[in-house]
Image (cartoon, rainbow, N blue to C red; front, top):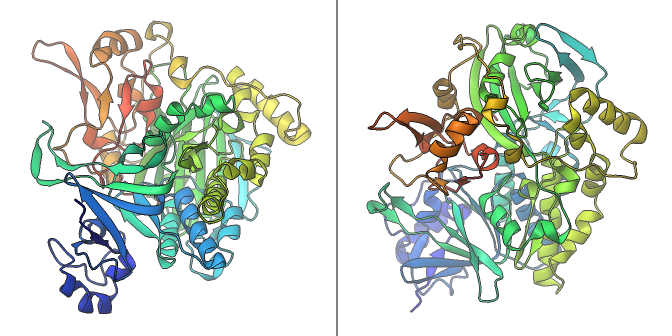
Length: 609
């Protein structure tokens, strides 16, 4: 037995005439009142409260959804998982094509963050190439892209010195931005086109039909307590079905990884494994006399050792703000290395300290990023959809940029989806067009940069300089990546412990202080979204053989060892601290930790990252 449920877009909810004339007669809201016109258009309540129980819905020309066995199902033409740069670019491009061809496709974007942009974090020196193609008039439409890159500096750091080097970066025409703010702006543009965006809903399961084709996703049940029982606030998840499903979950997307493995998408094109780095970032407000809007600084060297790939960045934004970050490749060997503590050390370098002194930290966050590049791109098409953006891995490592390539991949996938749904072609055109695009050319030219550093800092610099300045990516061979990141970790007995200084509370801080600045929040009374495949491995393997690396590689102190009732060490998982960075899913030596989505709306709440 089916019952039709009315589905309204957030723009409809904010139309006062619609609320006054239509909503009361249909009793649209099962509980509560419609949000006032001033309410956040991206609140999770707009989805929960936009359900009606009326067979009149089809006559009104609005979307219908059905329910079976207590679980609702909504059908769209295209479902997009993730409201980041790739997902929103795909959605916008789809609606643009509908306008150009005088047709219509229903498009839904599902986002696990409480608000659009709330989970988005990046450097970010933004290259506007893809945005110029997508929204050519963005400069006249109050986009939060205001500070042009004004200078490029490249330093090699020793403990006490910053040695200037020729800068390999060319950021002329680029902008220093907050990506979380840009994504919120893109969300508004998407809504103007009639795209339905639902934040606060975690996509927890891929839906398949009888032929093993992807037909959508299921959102996570809400209101489940730690013991698995249903609380009074329980709400079952929703099946959101699409004729095409696009996964834009970002780096190490949980469902994207399942799709890649299920359909053997790496094997399809002989792609190598993906490699990753962990980026840790703060936004500071500094003294106006030290602020140089648009100044871009990158560094190599200290505080990392010569065998660990990584570096730092310091970007001068607007409003006396600077973005400071440290990126550490996750194929580091020493299990005693702590990326968070390395970041705290960085801030005490004289060249960095002089900029930050007298300033205030506004926000903290962390996220992993893809570094595999060209060699690690899987075949992005599967039965029923495609993988786009950083879920596939289009970061240009030497540029330290991936937003423009992620956006372009979303646009190309949207064009393929439109062709498949409206013109009778198929999704494989996404792969063909991707290989013919500037994304492919750019990543191919940069393909040997990251693997060159497998041989250490100095050989890596030599090879990358030759590639960048002389050969320009035209060598007739492609270097391979080394071990997978989790396999690269050495046994503790082979490594020297690292002693880190205590934070001073002025430049360096303890984890709880930083975590507070990330605005991270989860409902404590829910099952842990961080799952151990074998609960015995932490105490039997990780602790004795690797000296508990999970207590160090996590930048939010999610994992710590405490004494049990018998005085023996036991792993405690503080899932409520999770920043959704995915480092644990990548770096755990035995791949024993599986990152899954928590209840929708949980996690960090970034505003200037």
